[in-house]
Image (cartoon, rainbow over all chains, first blue to last red; front, top):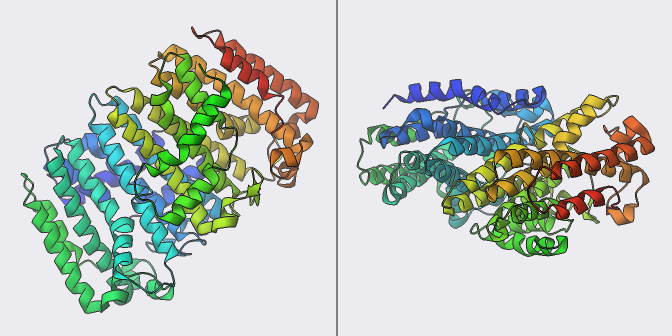
Length: 291
Length: 291
């Protein structure tokens, strides 16, 4: 297995070539998609997919299109979330948001394009593969990204603005809006390595707890974080009356719960017959991150 | 093979159950997706997929999730096209557009949701199938819907408003914005029936010519059609300085070119070793339609 930074570099260098491998894309559309796709970030989801695949004895090279696809899905969700009709954000990762640069029409199309490109890229790869691992991974990723997963969480988030935070609702939003897209790379990475359903279940549960810890930390950073390090404005959740864990439990309560989720994530790793050090370290880094 | 209306009824009754079979979807999101999905229309694309599959000896029951998926993709593209930042349409198929009823945020999410649901539904079906026909059909449909296909055409259309119509540009927009999603059901239907690449190529070319005839007729109806029969306002293309065939060739020139495309579509059918009467009739009906 490689270091986080090595997987990250592999993803970084593959995103644009993978997109362009699909064929001729109108210049302005490609530009808009690349603008957000190449705006940096930690590449957490694709790194997890590659590392999970290699941890389980799979081939990271073969998993690379699926890793890039999940980053495309994450990126499309950010572009659409930032739109004026949604969160109306001007700044993302320290840069103007997609619609600020390309206009709302292109931002909508760039988002649609990235979601479609993700499915297309995985499908093309799955057609080339001699067995069913590719289509299994594609199904896992689209299901977690979809109307029972990430989009469901995003919808409940949008609809709940102004409502009084309730634990069941905040949990639902966090489990779907955030954790679904951290479960997907764990499950898909293992599926691509040919792991069995028992192992995939443990990987799913690790992703869920990691995702909850991740989102609780995100909520904390919006309150106590540094806008310069974050590359986005803070205090936005409170301004929009968002359903956050901090609104429910306060800063200290959220810190405690996030630490508990990290512990639960790590406990899941014991169910996997692999060297899980990479994912133990990753879970431990969740609550100390600054962006 | 069945009659057009039988295939249409099969699709009509399957769309909502297919969507709901994905699992728990937040009520308001499901409602927004169903609103546009069930707003009627001719169901041309899914009917073509089912008929193409049966014509080539395949099983329409097995093809049904793919047929519903392509209608979901068509529907999402209409929802996003109608948004204020795009064509800003208030009326679609005689009903208020999605964002007029559910708000822009839900309309964006409903569109994203339908696109994702289409890929998810096909992926789940492909996983259940014992061979590679499902993943081939999924790949065909996502490619035609994507950034080298329908989204590419839509982007060039959006970017060209106000430009002087040029034949190469109008052809590109029509070939991708419209024809790509008529090629896809022909190719995917045949792929699901296990047809070879030579047959799939002829099916593609039929879809291309049919698509061009369809779009030319659409452009004509916007000028000489009846708003009540169409269920949408006429004269919109001219108002928006859209790239249309009528702007390029006039009404009579467009009628002549549409008839020629119908002839080219029918000629492709001779390359297929099946009873192609269904698709001959369909092509002949293209230029006489009123909506």
